[in-house]
Image (cartoon, rainbow, N blue to C red; front, side, top):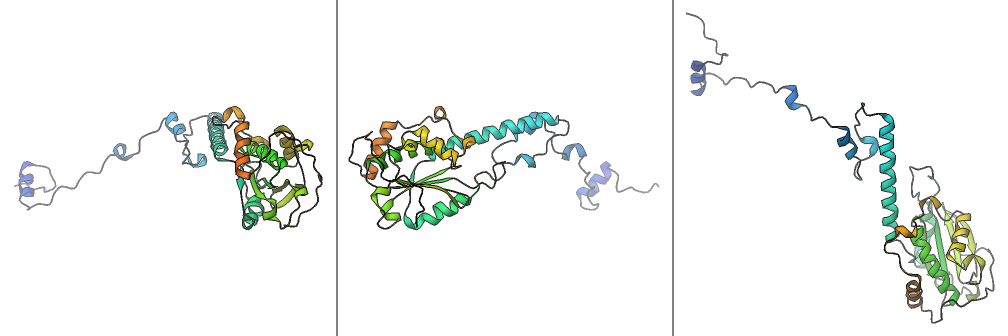
Length: 265
C-alpha cells in the first residue's frame, strides 16, 4: 500500500483537512509581479513636481534625458516663484509698527534671508521704515511707499509716527526714511518732502532705493500682474484718513533738512 502524502492536494486530504485531522496547506507566496509597485511613466514622474514635495527628493526615471529633467525643474521652479510673488504682492502693504516693535521688525527682520537657496542668499531682507508726521510731505511719501510695497513684496515697508519713535523728534526732520538690510543701516534720509527729487515720484524713489540695495529688482512684481491693484487716488484718500492729513493733494513742500545725519533710536 503506497504511503500517504499529506502535502498533496487531493480530495481525500481535503476531507481530512476539513475535519482538522491534517493541517492546512501552506499558502503560496505571491508572485513578484503582484507585489512590485506599479511602474511610473515619465509624465507621472513629472506630475509629482508640486508644492508639497522637494524636487531633489523625486525618484526620476534614469531613462528620462537629463536635459529634459532640468528643463522641467526650471519651468516648475519659475512657476512656483511667480505664484509666490503674486501672492506676496497681494498681501503686502505699508504696515504700521510701534516703538516696542522696532528691534524685531527692523533690525532682526533685516537679517532674515528671503531666499536662502538662491544666488542671492546671505543678503538679508530689505527694510524701509518711514517716520512721519501730520504734514502733506508725509502724506505724499506714504502714498508712494504703499505703491512700492506691492511692487516689491520681498522688502518690508513699515511706518511709525516720528514722535512715537523718537521723543521730541522735530517736525522739520519728517518724513524720514531709514533703510536696513542684513542687520545694518543702509542709509537715512532726513526731512525729505514732496519737493525733494528722490521723493517726487514713485519712479524716483524706486531708483534711489534700488541704488542702495533696499529693493530686490529680480523679485519685482509688474503692475499688470496685480489684478487687484488699488488706484492711486484711492490710496491718497485712505492715507489722508488713516494718518489724519487735512491737506489737499499734490501740494509742494520745501524740505528744511535733507541730510543723512545719524538718528539716535
